[in-house]
Image 1: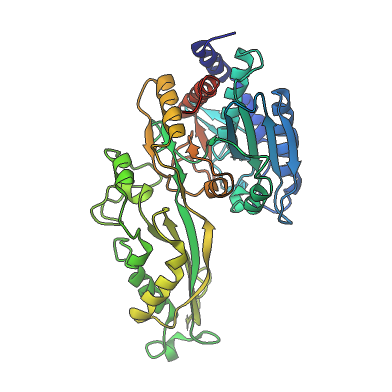
Image 2 (image 1 turned 120 degrees about the vertical axis):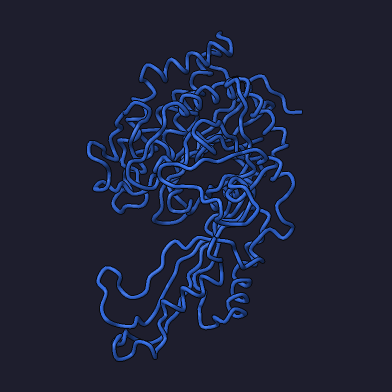
Amino acid sequence: MQDRASTIAAALDFFDDGRFRDRLADLVAIRSTSQDPGHDADVWKYLQDGIAPWIERMGFTVHIHPNPRDGFGPILTAERIEDPTRPTILTYGHGDTVRGLEDQWDEGLTPWTLVEQPDRWYGRGTADNKGQHALNLTALEHVLAARDGKLGFNVKLVIETCEERGSIGLREFIAEHAGSLKADALIASDGPRVAPDIPTLSTGTRGTFHFDLVLDVRPGGVHSGNWGGMTTDPAIVMAHAIGAIADRNGKILVRDWLPANGMPAAVRGALAGLELQSEASATIDPTWGEPGFTAAEKVFGWTSFIVLAMVSGRPENPVNAVAPNARAHCQIRYTVDSDPAKFEAALRAHLDATGFPEIRIENAGIRMPASRTSPDDPWVRFTLASMEQTLGRRVQVIPNSGGGLPGDVFVDHLHVPLIWIPHSYNGCKQHGPNEHFLIKPAREGIAAFTGIWWDLGEYTPG
């Protein structure tokens, strides 16, 4: 039997000699997009051909279930129980991807073929999320081999294929199977590090609340020459209504959306000293958002308001008419410190008070709830110590990532602490063309998870 250091070295050899890259290439080649129609067979293929045979060889018992909601992708569960008295870890991933967007990738790149460049691997799903859960399962495979087929703990696995459509059906599924999925902690990977060169551990995610702002003024457009200047332009009214929700620099003016007690001291403390950097695809604007907050506090500890889409008339084919209506689709990103049940009523009251009673709010609701585990949780401390031992440097803990994940589902129905260890970064283009996985963070990821799996075999929760 090997020791900890030699097992991590073996996993790194597997990564460095191209075997992990080739494994990931096979997974990327399965066109398992859940957003493009006509790929129902591909999401099943990902689970049946890409994942199930591999983990069965590791001694897992595997089941692939239809989604509780008709028309949405299947869910794989698997378990490997050695000793019910030992800790049980639940891990998670999603095998579906966003649209391929084949016609938008740079020359020489294609979504369904892994292409290697000096510091990265291109391909749809490399970062979100095939590469991330494949790293973790590969690390587990190496610990099994090093310990002669024994881990010293139990593992349960959930891989869904509808995350890119909001994890539809996952909540019902986990609720129905809560007994068989019971575990001590969830340790999994998705999302970005706080920076490419900073190993990160997140204990939750911000939630997402969506709504439409709608203004209908008349049945149809009217001539801009004959009517312009004396009839209401809905686009102008809508622009002012949005300006009443957030000021010129993005400060939210609907203050009831914000954490009622301000930013918790534990959140502020976890983020102290964390400096985020601009990237080629996006810059940090110091004056944008809540005044007096650092960039890290704004994205990991506070509420943000985003206009995702806005339209009046036909921008692609404008005519000389005052438009009949305007619509904006908006999003609130929030932490567990805010109450989303109050968001719509607070917005309605704010719009009425600021002179926009005619603006309707439609389709308001949570897409993904917020979640958070205390950074002081013993499972968080264990995982952090393991990572820092393996990597030989500090790991940044954040109370929740900026994006959304279905962590709330596991908290609500399985009551597990959440530990997300991302292997990607903000600039990975995961929802657009040219998605890629940076090789250096991925290499650190396989080392870190090999160490975590190894240490779990010797860990007894206090």
